[in-house]
Length: 353
Ligand code: F6P
Image (cartoon, rainbow, N blue to C red; front, side, top):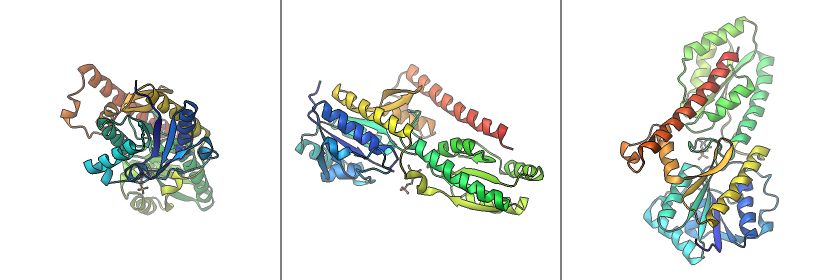
C-alpha cells in the first residue's frame, strides 16, 4: 500500500451546491488521519498551473452551508492534451502530492482516469446538479437544484392562477431530464417534457384544453433544456391553439446556486470521507457512487462505459475489455434506470389533470 502524505482536492466542471461540504469532509478526514491536503483552485487548470495551497481545518470552516465551490471551477481544453496532463503530473510530483480527489461530472472523471493512467491515484466524487452520471443514483447538487426549481415554479403558479395563464418553464440538466421529471411531479405540472421520454405535443395541448374546460386556471409545463430551444415555440403554439395566455421562463443558472439542502450536505460529507478512505486504502481510479441508497465505489472506466451505454454513445469496441457477465449487468442496469424514469413519468401522467 502506498504511503499517503499529501493529497489534493479539486472541483471541476459546472459547480453544484454541496461541493463545499465534500471539500470540507475530504480535508477534515484526511487531516485527522495525518495526511496533508492541498486545496486546488479552478479544477484541473489550477492543477496544471500549481494554483493551490495547503489547507488546515479552519480553511474549511463555515463552508458547509455555502453554495458554489470555494475552490472555484474551470473547464480546461489544455488539460485534455498530453502536455496538459504532464503539467498536472509535474505539479503533483514537485509538491509531493500522492493522490487527488476530484469532484465533478463525467469530464472530471475522464481527467481522473487519465491522471491515474500516468501514475497518480485519483478518486472521483459525483458533483453536478444534472444527476446524469449513470453509475450513481445520486450526484451532489441535484437535491438543491430540484428544491430551488420547486420554489421558483410555485411562485410562477401563483401568478398564473391570478391571470389564468400557462407558464412553460425550462430547467437545466444538460441532456438529462432528471430535474424537470422529479421537480415536475412535485409541483404538479400539467406536463413534463424531457429528452428521455417520447411525447406528443398535440396530446399535451389537447390535455390543456380539456383541463381549461373543466375550469382550471393555471398551467405549468416543465421542460428540459436538453430539448434545445423548444420552450418559446411551444409557448406560442399553446397560446395559439388553446387561447390560454402563455409565458416562457428559463430558470437557467439560478437553480445551480444557493445554500445546499440537508440531503446534499449529508451525501457530500459521506462521499468525501469515503473518497479519502479509498485513497488511503491504496485504491485509485474509483468513483464514489450511491447504489440502493448505499455509498459504494466503482471503477471509473467501467462507470464511463456504462454512462456511454445508457446515453447511446457506446462504440462496440468499448465493450471488449468486459466479460459477458459484466456486459449483461451493464445492460440490465441501464434498462432498470430507464424503467424507473418511465415509472415516474407515468405517475405524473396519471395524476396531472
Ligand atoms: O452540468 C451542469 C450544467 O448546469 C448543465 O445543467 C448545463 O447544461 C450546463 O452546466 C451549463 O454550463 P455553463 O455553466 O457553462 O453555462
